[in-house]
Amino acid sequence: MAKRGRYPDVPTFDKLIIPTVLALKKLGGSGTIDEINKTVYEIENLSEDVLQIPQKEDGNISKVDYRLAWSRTYLKKSGFLENSSRGVWALLKPEINVKNISPEEIKKKVREQVIPNDLNNILLPKKIEEEVEDEVEETEKWKEQLLNVLYNISPAAFERLSQRILRESGFFQVEVTGKSGDGGIDGKGIVRINGFLSFHVIFQSKRYKGSVTPSQIRDFRGAMQGRADKGLFITTGNFTREALKEATRDGAPPIDLIDGELLCEKLKELKLGIATKTIESIEVNKDWFSNL
Image 1 (cartoon, rainbow, N blue to C red):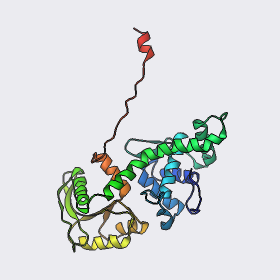
Image 2 (tube, rainbow, N blue to C red; image 1 turned 30 degrees about the vertical axis):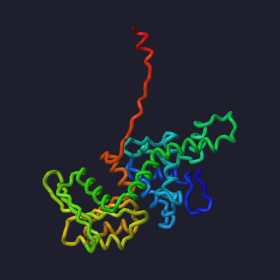
Image 3 (cartoon, one colour; image 1 turned 120 degrees about the vertical axis):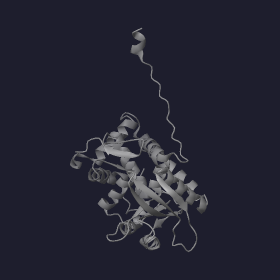
Image 4 (cartoon, rainbow, N blue to C red; image 1 turned 120 degrees about the horizontal axis):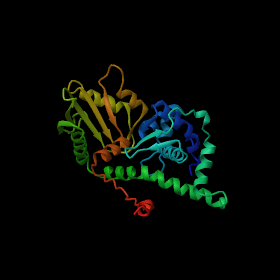
């Protein structure tokens, strides 16, 4: 289970339950994992150093994000949240008052679902950990596997993947132009809005672990000046909060950002290298037979 251990600055999953609900309320009652997590960071005022602590030494998910996954799972199991196949999480009752939510009661309720009260409580910690872990990994582990695959393809292959994503998303005249001395520009394309308005877009794709800094955003913006209407920065890593602010700074050409989390979701949505399997569920309708 999520413990403080040697990371006292990382909130435990139960301490993140209320902030998760507050984040969803702030987002209008629903949001993607990425939107929810980023809103919780703001609510909890988590430092960049805390956000960069990995769950595993060689893993891609941060300790904070992992514990947030536990928080969502507990909220779902206790009837506060639901999630769709498209990765959107929503409050079952958007008008809910957080004053009526008790993390301790939620933990108790979920644990009672897993192991009845009359069984040996010694079994409880391991059993609850296994069940919640399975559900968390169902939504998170495939992303870690996918990112590990992306880390091991060549830079040229990652540029071609970015090109394919843009084409599948409605861009046209998409070209990979990446070459040294081009300010980090890897390609360009055109996107048309509602069949009328067209925007020239320049993209950069960075295939690495770690965070993109505001200086990298500024360098990319400098390279795109006078060459495109918008910029798109794609990475398998993430963006620091300062990089996010720099991308949308007032008075500067806007740059849209796709981090590793969003990249995984986009590949899943477009079915590029991702296969979603549906398990068949069969039920026998006794009433049908009794009416013969």
